[in-house]
Image: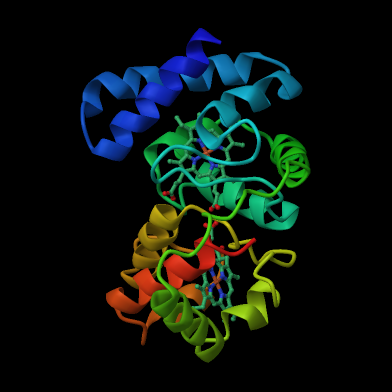
Length: 205
Ligand code: HEC
Ligand code: HEC
């Protein structure tokens, strides 16, 4: 439990871009403690950052609730192989076997879906967001209600700040997907449009 609290503090510092060096030691500690315990005891370590109920309360850490198992499996693989770069997650996945990845993916898929970001406060932005989602056919791949399908993730109700961050990373090619679909999708989409899309998507149930 102590580790869980340190992790949360650590995650917050990360999001704020502060105290990097002090944090690295903590990540190693978390990774080591996660690796030592049996798998079912390791999930709480993950959820200390990602939110116990499947809903993340920490800036730039994605909610995992009801995420597609095949998608999670692939992402954990990409983190382990350092094809998707993130200091924390590269460490967390470092020692996991393929079977571990599958077990985590299945456990995560069973968590409840995150709540949407609440009532829309700006109907005009909601309308723009919806029209962009339809124009760029997000609903074609991510499912009509954006709840995901197989290797295509659930995005409905995801944290707005994480959606913006990760879409910008696909667009500027710092996040590499298992295929190039998202880099291609985001090519014609401006930063302003990405914000409107994230506003809409994070408010979907
Ligand atoms: C110290 C905080 C922390 C811990 C502990 C942690 N994660 Fe993460 N995780 C993150 C952050 C931050 C990201 C976002 C990475 C990025 O921006 O690409 C992430 C991303 C992910 C993703 C990708 C989600 C998506 O929607 O793309 C998965 C899956 C994941 N983590 C699973 C796990 C699992 C399984 C564990 C435990 C073995 C774990 N995480 C432990 C912080 C953490
Ligand atoms: C051609 C199919 C396709 C279309 C169209 C598409 N996506 Fe995706 N999207 C994917 C796939 C596949 C992934 C997973 C890629 C990977 O491995 O990183 C993904 C990943 C994402 C992620 C990362 C989610 C996470 O939890 O890390 C976001 C956000 C996203 N898409 C948003 C959108 C939005 C918004 C649109 C419309 C503007 C869109 N996508 C259109 C296929 C698509």
